[in-house]
Image 1 (cartoon, rainbow, N blue to C red):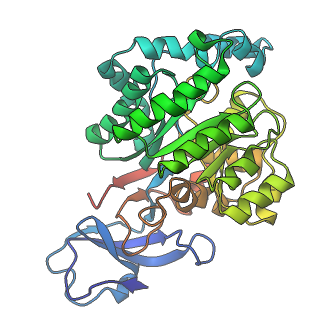
Image 2 (image 1 turned 90 degrees about the vertical axis):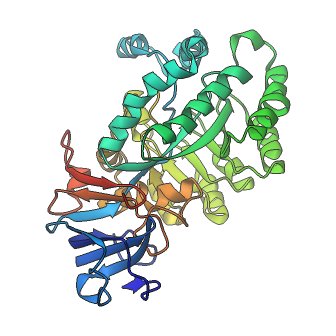
Length: 410
């Protein structure tokens, strides 16, 4: 039990709760039975046993009796492509008929197929199409979401996507972090001239969007159908020169050395990782890079090689879990289903899954000092659940037991 500034009463208290604090250094999920939380100005000032609440704190605070329910930190979806227009249901049918992701992409499908619809959509239209996807995440307890660009692949369209991502935070009570993913694919107007497009990303879009204040991190797709290691390294060097953190889609379809590259640049996270080898896992551990696992894409693409979870455990790499919500390879807007997939398909434990959508997901966004655990000083972002044990959040399929969601103490 810890609390801060006991002389000044909080403005909100939650009593009669069971807490899954997910605090670093506590065993398992950091459970506290018969617990209580207190917040002031949207930040937690007390996390502990109800009996240890300072005397007099209940007098003036808004008090909520949680009826013995479990409280976790608000969920963090740390990898999404939430803002886009159109859909790719036709590609789903093609994959059912046997076409591979790579075959579809090389035939002009995949990312390129979404590009046209996204470029044609106005900012208001992008917002209209994106809000229902965000609402689905919020309905399952998400309080912070990362949103990538990457379906515009030209300055005007990338700017619209990132502006819409910022507008999502104004439209809903949710934290939003934006990642610039200009290095997602080669747009058709640059076909046959990769160098010119990469130069446009590095020397044109990146500085312009950074000047607009629209970039929280820079991402890239390091893969045989996208950009190679050297190309991404040039992008990351430019991002770091501007003081921007980096993230990477790495080793999803082949081992292109993406995990090691992410480590070399001190990336916040390396994501996917199905083909990462032990050297890559060790490099990530040494650099403190979070491994973000995306079971929705693995499931949708019917992949056979799962991420090397045992190697990640062996080397002590923190593992996050995210939806990878996108129109083609992971049309998933359920973080709870992502947890079940991570456990069932990747063999994560319940404790690993819950840390993966809270503490480790916050770290994958560089926000572990602000969110992701129930600890004094962090935002009072909470998910209150009608469950008997936390394992139910991973175990159940198709049931949403969220009782209430609290963002910044509200």
